[in-house]
Length: 141
Image (cartoon, rainbow, N blue to C red; front, side, top):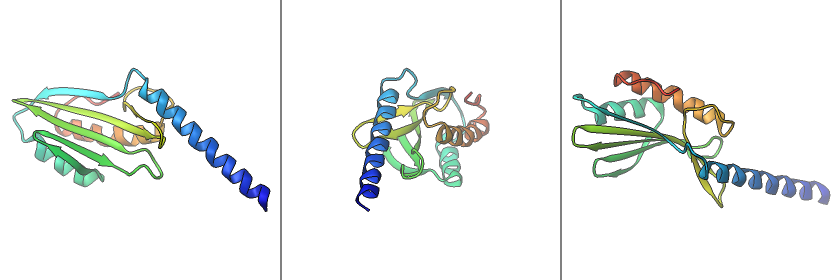
């Protein structure tokens, strides 16, 4: 019985260590987020809010013209983020997935084909490309 508990503790520590290594790789990576900048005459904030509600993203922070949406809490999959910012008539959308290793945190862009948090990146990219299509923007690759 004691060896089973010992193996479970060892496995948990190894998993936590691997998660922190992945967060460190993400934190020091070149592609921590995707950034799309554009101009639009439509009410982009309302479009994003409606899209977020329909795709499970919740507004977690609003600071002036900047709104941060998140899907997931990081329990089973890494949380997915979309940040909308407005400066005059220009908008920017920042997209990423966060790896939380409890000790370290790192962000990873949705586009690209790296091995880190592949499933959450794919889920977020699919949903966010629907938003980009409704705004008349090019999809993330």
